[in-house]
Image: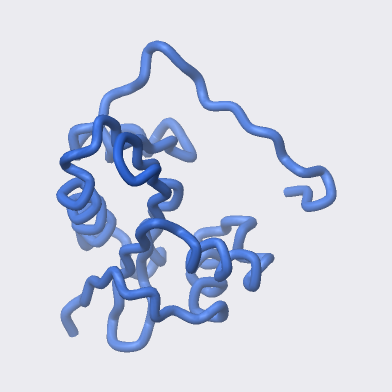
Length: 137
């Protein structure tokens, strides 16, 4: 079956939880919060194999200048098929008129993937965060 891509937010909390847990992301432990966050996001591109959610990209934007790809993930059973790359290219087309399209790779090994899609390392900044200790890792 061919993979279908959509910006329609038709996924359920259970579908997103399964996808996020499949890649070991802590967000999957909070399915209701995750679903609410995704539903409130500027753009969510999802990849489907029938009724199975197999990939997802979440974008947060300011409507004019900056868009930030926060999640890019593909179910391990579907990795290596070009799904992530296709979704990233969809996002690049949608945000082509923005001044910046940014992403923060989870691991340095993912930087190569993003560089292959035209991203470059930011030399004038470093990613930082505050983790709420009540959630832990």
